[in-house]
Amino acid sequence: MRSFLMTLTAASILVADHAIAQADPDSLHLRNNCRLATEIIARGHPAPHEQWAYRIAPQCGSNAGRIIANKLIESRTSTDTAELRLLTAPAAQLHDASIFAASLEVAADKSASSVARPFAFRNLIWLISYGADLGNFDPWRSSGLGCSGAVHDRPKYAGSPLPSDFRDQVRTLAYRVAHDRSEHPAVRKSALCTIAYGGWERRNEW
Amino acid sequence: MEFTADRRFWERFQIFEDSIRGCTGKRVCEYRPLRSGRMYLKATLTDGDGAAALPAVFAGEVVRKDAQAPKLVVRCSPSATVTRGDSITCNANVEPQALQDSLRISEWSFDGQRRMDGDTAAYSWAGPMVDSGTVRVRGILLGKGVEDSVRIAVNPRTWPKVQAASPPHDSLAGDGKLDLPAAPVTDTAAAFGYTVGSMADSHIMRDSTNLPYARRFGQVKTGPNAGWWFLTSPVNRPYWLVHHVHAFETSDPWFKKQHGGQPGQPGWLPYCPQYEISLLKRRALHHEGLLSSPISPTDLFQPLYTHYTYFRDWLSTHDLNKLFEKQIWNPNDNPWGFNSFAEKLELVWVQEVQDPETAANHTLVDGSYAVPIVCRAR
Image (cartoon, rainbow over all chains, first blue to last red; front, side, top):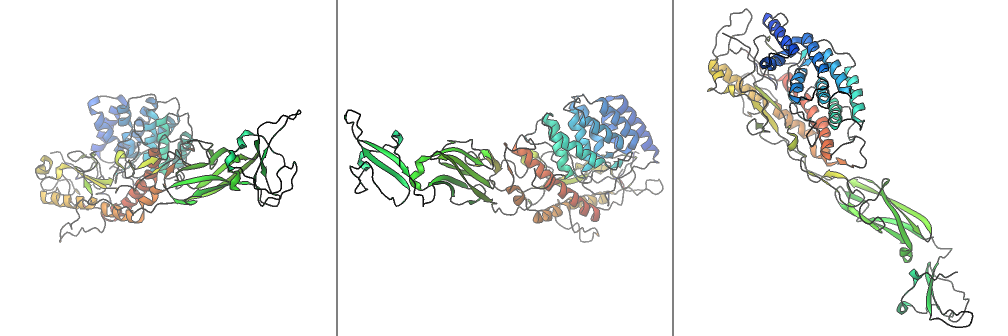
């Protein structure tokens, strides 16, 4: 019989501390799942299993991080919101240097699409804010900025280590884009959201 | 003094009376006026042949050298100190008042921004004030450039402290954006203690169309703050939203599948009997804040805080009305390039309310009062 853990959560229930979680690296089952998931993500098929693969991916650490990062770079001109939403979803839980570097690159790239860049910013927000949910992230149509939303106890998994100054890099990019009026409105909105989630603007300075 | 025949100063005859005794008929007359003002002369002009025209009235400005020079004074009523949203009327006056119609207004401004609303040359400027600043008026008086300014102080409104909406909303009555699956998302590979899915969660309200400040702001149409945006009424009570899966229900197929027993693998927790699932349900919903009653008198798990009660207490020390009352936005002074006031308010919400509350709430409630898990699901 298939067995699984009792998982009570998102808002909190299992984990007493909020350290980054790590899946059991010795789990044969996990290794098999991760091998399959990373192949599916890399190849983009079979399509029916993609949702499953991206859900497993955060537990697969740096291997998944590299593949997702490559896909993100490849998709920098994509305007397919469904594809980009799926591709970037693991970054909510997987904190990985490859994903960080790719997200920073796409978010900064003016030749990338105005759909891919906000999703890249969303990846960066997840790295700097504990509680950002961003499930309803929509800087394209919202009358506001389309980035409010919080959640408790989202599990986090470690990939390859982030650079020690990753917050400074995010901050520098966010301020540059936010102040550039030539940027696409959705990209600027995403940069503004990043600044807010970073808590970087002094009170009453907005 | 010289008299001018400028028709603008011609007066109707009936208000003209000979008030300076001893000058009638004289071409030159010595007179010491009591104060500055306008002097009128009725005279008949003749041409070189002695032909007389009808009497005409001439006027000229008299300024006593020992008196204060005429000046422009701007005053605002009811006071230069107002409460945000209250209207103010600023008037440009000439002292002495007798010279008022000698003044030509060239510019009104507020903190350097020129007046754009209404008659820009009017003697007054009126409208609601939302931000402190300096009203300045410039004009031409007796051929000379004059200006004056007044500092307007805007005080905040006193709005009642916002309390958390009670009780917390559950997933069916909340923002309508369910974010949990009908049954738990589980993974057979995950080690105990780490989560790969969810059975319950909670968070501060996050429907951007219904955040506490939504539909509670407006734009000033006239006066020194014309064009500015501000909140016109206190914010709504924020609510706490709890989601939980249907799998907790005894009729749910997932629930029916659970029964106790030993998994067989060394070190693994026993499977959950159904009574344990029911206990976990109560603990979980209490942890989120949906159940306010004690879990059970005999349950050793009795947390001091739930996510909801922490949120409620957080609000008692973070006055949302005080925070949002002072939020204003001037589209003409817009360094962040906002497209709307709603964009600015959302940033304030995220940075000042949502994110800090979420982080602090998690640190305490999940750090100190996490629900103990003593079994595993099938």
